[in-house]
Image (cartoon, rainbow, N blue to C red; front, side, top):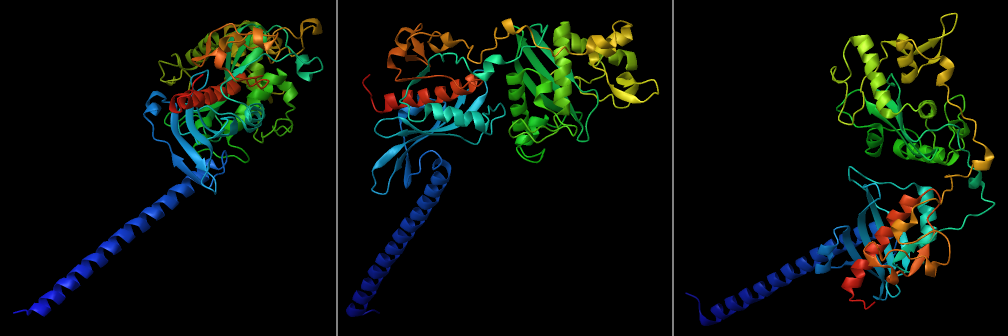
Length: 452
């Protein structure tokens, strides 16, 4: 039986142990919380320092964010003194063609002028990409500008070399297509799709589908690391090459060397021969008015000739409408031989179809790459020929008199603080980044209860 003094000592020790345990638990909690906060701040700094190099970042929690599904998160950056330096907005916005651009926008805390712009990792299947050179030009246009932003038409510069962009003879408007009839060593079949408007090549896509229907297209595989080449990823190189063709309009001006490479297109190190050959075939098809639908009919005619069934009946058509089949085992159908029976080239689908039908001459299938009369060379070829009216402005004139619609990105035109010119040959890219910046403005306007 405990004496009174023993009981008193026991109670005292128990209280001390409880206090010590509470201190240890509390200390451990704060230490763990501090480590977690440090890890989070390191992650924030790694993600956001490219647009706002702050000491720490705090995520904004606001009910207003539920009205802005394009915004993935908004953060305030703080300096060493603890004073706020700016906002970082993490967004995923839609491009004009419905794809998704992931981008970081930083804004000055006091003036909300744009401090930084950077593309963010994009894991969406329908991702939109802007090449590095165009992104740098867009940043030069936008950084330092007050949001919100709209376009103003850029006056044509008389000594701009792009005003002399060539225009090939006889191009008919429409969508044109060409694919290789055999696969490469990686079992990919290259194809080019080209759109012509007002006699000018306005859109070009170069990609390749796999004869193994379970595999991704080459561009998607390259972005996910499943298809590797030296230098930039293949999808970026393809984009750069298509962009270069839109500027020069003639595949021969891409200066392809005997090894299939080119030195004049920045960032392109891959073999461009499939692109050049298929682009020329698309141009020849355009000059003949042989559209994509006729091309697919030509592929069907080849399949019927060889296998007595259409491509669809043979199960060669994939979900995208491509004829996923290599005619490699039937080289006689597409190979051109000289008098000594030596292979000297390949025929395109239109030429094969005409051969099977017993019509057409070989020279009818060669694209005419001579330019049109210089007197009309500039018609429809100005890089600034875009529909500014969709962005609330008309072309030319004083900016104060250009407003012809009442809103842009659901913002009254009276609120526009800055007007810029789009980057030449990158209207959609510039427009998409502006949309991201204007989305930041709309959120902050609501979050900060701005009175406009």
